[in-house]
Image 1: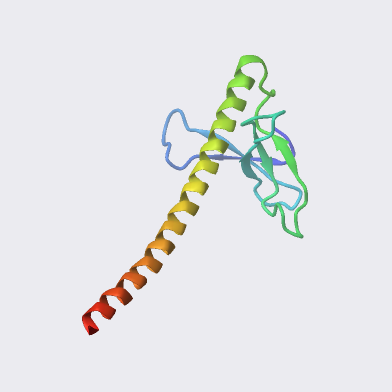
Image 2: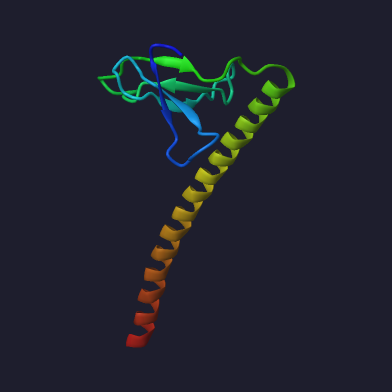
Length: 123
């Protein structure tokens, strides 16, 4: 086990077959956060990073969890799945924008219709 890892036994497991899990510490001394890569080179590959990532206190710690990077048909399948997810997220964002616009237009039309009805009632 490396310098940055500590052992502990899972509290849910009692008796035989206790689960052993490692905590990886970053250079700050904090438990490193697990994350997943979305890059073309390492799609869906898991890694440890500093808990303070993207803050001024980030120690820039990085360590892969997985032994090797994906390749061949698995890599192509992961990239295709990632691209499909991104496309669906973009579609969802566009739909949300359209819904917001329709709601705004509907509210304006409702006010306009109310003014017309009130105008006729005054006649």
